[in-house]
Image 1 (cartoon, each protein chain N blue to C red):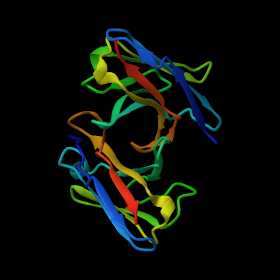
Image 2: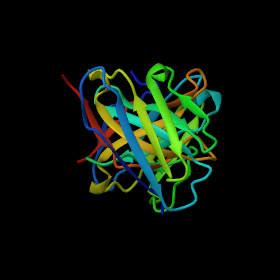
Image 3: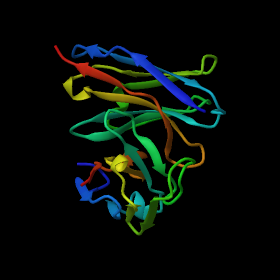
Image 4: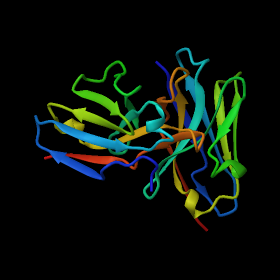
Length: 111
Length: 118
C-alpha cells in the first residue's frame, strides 16, 4: 500500500520502448512536488535514474526519460536492453506526511 | 566521487535497539541531508528520517517515537538508532544522501540486512 502507485510489472522485447507510470495525489505529485526515479538491479542498492521529473544524472543514458503531468508521472525507456532488467521506483515528497514517499516498484522484464 | 559505507548488527531480538552507522567519503557533502531508508518485500522502500549538518532532524511520523538519527561531523559519520524493534522492522537499511537542491536521494550506501527474530 504505497503512497505512489506503480504497476507491479511490465515487459517488452529488446529494442522496444516501455513506459512505467507513477500515480500520486494532491498531497504529493499533484501538489507540484517533483518526481524522481530509481533503478535497482538485483542484489544492489537503488540508483538515482531521473531527478526533478526529467533530468538525468551524469552517466545515465539518454534512453531513459521522465515526464510529469498533474498527479502522475512516467518513466520511458527506449531501445530496451537486457541490462535494463531491474526494479524501478518513483519517489516524491508528500506534504501531508511531511516526508518522502515511494511507489511500490515496477519489475521490468526484457523478453 | 561520493561513497557511503555502512555497518551495524544484522541480527536482533525483539525489543532490542537497532544501531547502524554510515561513513561518507569524497566530494563536497556539506549541504546534503543525511538520511536513512529501509526496504522490505512487503512495504517496499520506506523513508525513515534525515539530519543535516546543522543537526536538524525530520522523521517519518510512523517511526518517530522510536527513531534517533545523529551525525558526527568530525568523522563524516551519521547513525541510526531504532528502539523496541519487532519482526516488522526486519529490512534492508540504507544510508543515503538527499540532495540539498531537491527532494531526491543522490547517493546510497550498500545496504545492511537487519533481521529481528527471537
